[in-house]
Image 1 (tube, protein in one colour):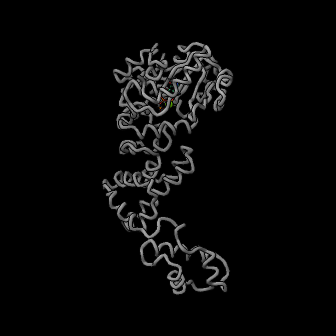
Image 2 (cartoon, protein in one colour):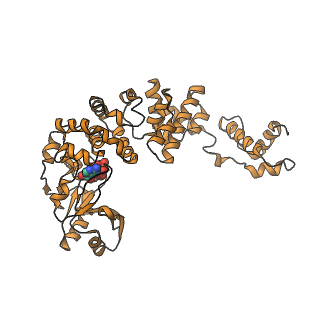
Image 3 (cartoon, helix red, strand yellow):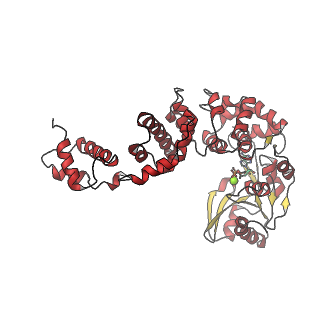
Length: 395
Ligand code: ATP
Ligand code: MG
């Protein structure tokens, strides 16, 4: 019996088949199923055209019609279904000039990057493997489908993907594929950097990241990685981590002269990642200045603890005790500014003679700090009294 994650999706395949189309599980889910790794999402390829899929299922979201990808909503879940396709020339090395929909699954498998990713599985678990993908998985081999140079010239992202799979799976890149990666490396510069970022993040998170780095050095591919081309040795120092935020904080804190902000800009990261990287840099400076105290723990969001512990390990080879962080957090009088029992309105009401201005925010910041370090109780009367003693002189 197939794992439960396939069973729901099998309904989609079954409905497509009832409508005289073919459909298979394809890509990462089949590879991960064969290797015994956890499967996180299931992709389906079908001979049905997007318009035909839309006719069959009542709820279809056309997410990438030009590539033949739709999302079928079925029993409150989403399934990505992509029409079998081949790709035209990649004259700009970024994206195919055109895609052609085809009715033969083998044609679709042929355009996929690596043999281990070019396996299809039907809803009963029967495998279709025209390029020896199962054998490649059994021997832990990453090998392109077809001529490696041609495939990397079509889309240089595949070079980075080979390294990413090496890092995630611990597989070895087949010799001929490796040589082609070296030969075509310069094409990485033509990629839309966002595509590179997605793969880099997965690469850095891989258990076998060190092996990928060995390959990056052997093939001198760091020349084509923004930021790291200037500081390749940092790659060797990095341990695996699930986000790029601590990686970019690390780059800044190693005194490279490259800021985390420059990294997030170079990789066109989201604002959220940018914020996280900057937070980590600030947290590290605060930690160096005053150690782990109430104010520090208050400042660092809990979701970033792991990244911070990682960062300190990377830079100082010191392991922070998470228990200590928990312990301090438990005792914090407040966890955020929202929990302060006074706000700007209270202060204006208490001091009507003073004109509105920046002093209100400044005093609220000070109140927050004193409450967090337990020098002031979070009680209105106490705070009012405290302000009277600490009011800035009026200019
Ligand atoms: P993951 O587990 O990270 O999702 P994946 O193999 O499913 O890994 P995706 O990026 O989700 O990777 O791509 C799904 C499938 O699409 C791949 O397995 C591969 O068959 C094909 N594919 C993706 N990107 C490319 C590419 N640049 N060139 C050729 N085939 C690709
Ligand atoms: Mg996938």
